[in-house]
Image (cartoon, rainbow, N blue to C red; front, side, top):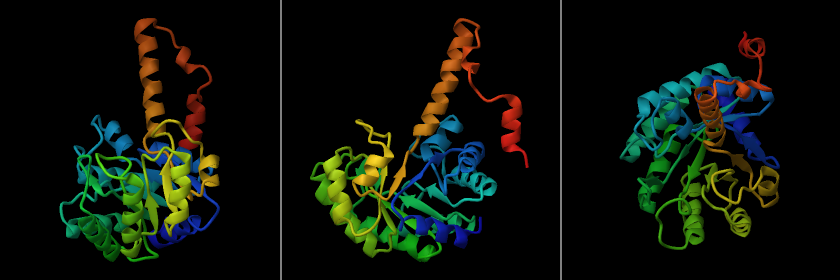
Length: 269
């Protein structure tokens, strides 16, 4: 999908009653989920790293991540939002270059995190990084999803107050949406949605208790993503199939799965 058209369509979803954006890790998973009717897909850095046999959190490297994101964007006709982690750079200028390269691929939007190695980046520095991202991909042409990790890092203060303070600064710097992973309390989610003057994104399935998407929408959440959850389910199925085959030699894991012909039809054309 053309990047500008994709960004326009993705941004419009944030004006509606709420939407689920599933996270994909390769071209195959992206195509399957787009075929199901999701209006947009997002990538998961965790899932992409696992697909390369690596742990999440940076060892994959930006070039290989960019290659994976490009493959995903090339096979779907829906907007793609990329998990850009902390921007793959140590300076604001480098973060801006990351976003510019993603936008040049036709990516409709992306997340930028405000934590590195489990610790929050100082707020002024985080704002500078988001401002550079916005300058590299002007409003309307790229949906900037500012992720704040006050609930998902080693932050020792009040995560609610810190999230609100950072969200306000990030929105002023040009963020279109604020992403708050790790928050698990329904009342906190409701208060965040009420006080943050922009759409908020919450990831379902990352923490317990698991709050389903309809309940999150009722709390005021606009965008529900699932992080590496679908990838975790897929790799768990692979492991369970392998264990059965190794330990018993049986193929019960094939019960109910799509046939070869079915899979061929899904990927034809």
